[in-house]
Image (tube, rainbow, N blue to C red):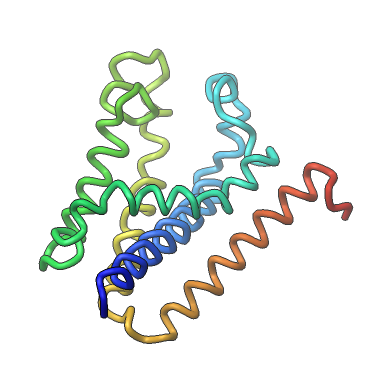
Length: 182
């Protein structure tokens, strides 16, 4: 397999792993962690959109583009993450460390968030289960891709799931904006 097809395969795998993991973690957050309730509260409603906002629905589809960005930004470390024995575990640790705990701003749950925001500790801890589920799912899907990616069923399943997420996202966006009367 030539280098161009290896890079394309890498981008595809990271993109679908991210998109599917993000969707699963998001569904978990909304239905199990009750984000809808928390986002309507006095604290989070200031800067979080309601879970039924049209752009939030479109966000499911837009995660495809974020997945491409994730793939682009970890591309220089691709060999270390995808070819070494414990590379995906390293990727998981870095995902939690850099993208959640040590963000470059005072985000919810981040180190700086605890220090520089006046949010109650509860709100910083609220996202931890979602973040852990995302990371484990993301790394798990990448592991399956790495191990069984040569089998067509893995790619066919990924295409079907991404299409279902995308169609659902776009239809929900269109119905909440009035573009698609229901």
